[in-house]
Image 1: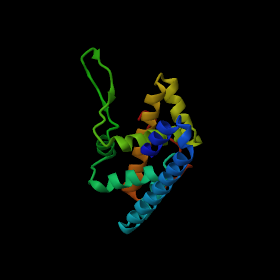
Image 2: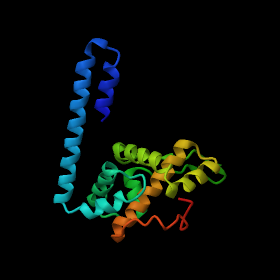
Image 3: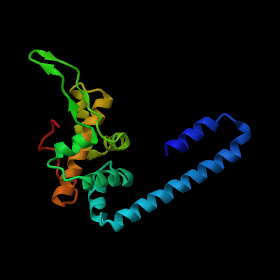
Length: 182
């Protein structure tokens, strides 16, 4: 997708190549759909179909993000949701000692593509009624838009981990009462 967008942007100003650019973009879109179908087929062969349905039920998580999370979940035997979040790179590095409180930022240890997918999922999820209140409460507490989205992405990863770990389906009737601080 990134390559498609780069091609589209770099060839946009060349009027002579408009038809060729449109054909190239159409071909890229077909290739992306073919890759998505192949990834879904591989997931079915690995027996991940139910896990994909579980993670796909979380508001904001689409098929590509769900597949990335399920593949990451099956990559290792994570002890906890914290370990899963840390592996993805959404854990917060705290710098401080005594009275000094340094700047807090993401460790970014994991795969940047998964973090990008999760950021986009959080952008979609913050508009969903299930996550909207949580996102707005973060903004009201003084979080920047990006920090609130990353906190929401972290929350989505935790929910997805719990669903995969306990083999449960997402229930939108359950509100975010357990731990609104994470």
